[in-house]
Image (cartoon, rainbow, N blue to C red; front, side):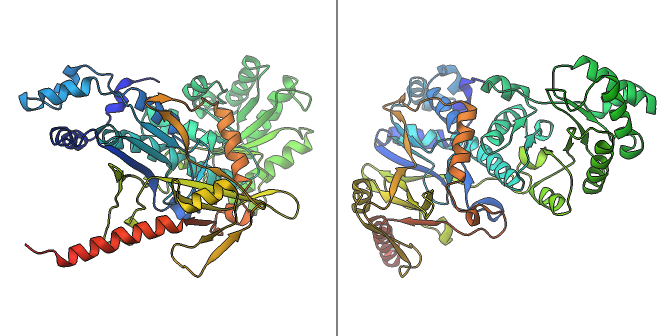
Length: 496
């Protein structure tokens, strides 16, 4: 979906500020903004990045609307000059961003915008709109998929908050581990197949009778030969007719373990643990040992974990609204803050300590070491000021020490030659031109899965995860405290 208006899915105050910036001579000052989050939802250790592709598309559409568009929300002669400016205001700056599928920790810049102040400022709302939605869905999908070794399908479009959310939410879910989606638009846009079977209405359309259920199954099989065949067996009674009619229809149509495209049944209600065990017993007793059991019914990571604890015989899961709406934590907490203006680092101070931000133009390094088996394991992330002493040491491969920001007695030394590193924020736009390569949805998914498995199992667990080491450089730490100290001192002297 390419809608140039998305660049203007914004709050009016971005543009009232913009007018003031321009008329006061500040609009072209070089600025740096960071998009980041402070705390992951549901006591997660981290979040999954998704949405940067749509952000780049949105940024490319800045300055694509006629002057008459701006007149609808900036009317009057007082805005005439500003409206004319906005008509031709293309993005000319630089963007550094984490790749989709990256795993990000609190306070790390996920997207860094380096641009003239007015250009960077007006991107705030549409950028947050995109990133907060997709990262909420991706992070929840990651949790659900980590609850099981079995495939999870996303099919929450009907519960998503609109078509845009359904389409891009399904994309985010696949990046973060879902095996497939039912959303056909997501499939078409990303060149991946969508999946689907039948609803209860297909069965009841043959009349509410046991024989009607059998005819429904029979017709479905005959109209979908050469495809994966999944029959919904809980419309009337799972054990007393549903599974028996499925077996009957499979036999009559020659569908058995030799059918090359796969076949199975779906459970959508009742005690899924009990029913799946009984259905498995019945299928196996009739020789249909290759028939898969697919389960749905308002599932999430907690229910899936409990089903498996109870010994459920489920081969794959379908998860809807828990993923599509990030039901337990629907509002993700990305923020977008000015960290440098005209070369001067700045920060926002707050009564809430968690809202204190890191100032300056930053970069985050992920440090990797090999374990005793030769596997590369991520050991810590360090955010530095670009070009500061620690940044230079890491890029040169020299010995360095990472110190905990909140407990200066906690530190870890990495010896030269014993670690490797990669920068998490990579160039995406240079001087207004996209430089980030396009990747397929499956490439993003593979990147996420590879990244995930470089963290330790204790850091990947859902309940009480071990917290991965995330630090900042001494120069960034000192800069933040220097700005704070001066600000507090000035506030203490301030009188009117």
